[in-house]
Length: 228
Image (cartoon, rainbow, N blue to C red; front, side, top):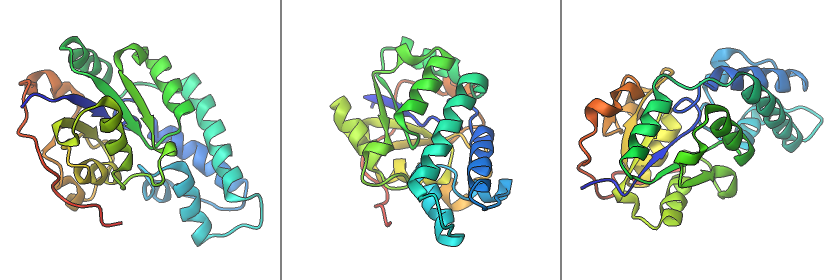
């Protein structure tokens, strides 16, 4: 069936933001005495920022400020970095315009906060292409919980099984698959093989969009439940 909507993750799919996240996270955590390596940062790729902070606070607790303040510091650093340095992922803008031109509703379902999503879409000049923008900050749980994908489909008025989701991280792939969406993985960083195996398709980049677009996908039905 043709997709009722195509839903993009943002970080690592639309924008090359993961290096910027590493800069913001290492600086914010260093301010509270926690030293993170790039490998450390990769462990939390795709998680909501509060989940990232909780993850490291559980392992290296600091006396002050509270985790919420550290999360706010990371977001503030990211807003500045995105406005100054954000670059699109290869072929991302062309892929968005390609789908938009075919009249298929587009949405963003991201773990990032809304202020960061808006900064990215404005920076890349593609805000007008999206029918809906949804941040997991409004959800009880972030990815890999499927909530942000389910609420995105509900807000669009379509069934999750009629949507195509495009993800790059293991946590994101698990969220989209658990929501019952046809899931395309475009991994930018190393992703565990067991997570990639859940995806319906794996692309080298969004440059494959035009060549693979047939207007239909064999969609329908949740494939795995979310297990927590």
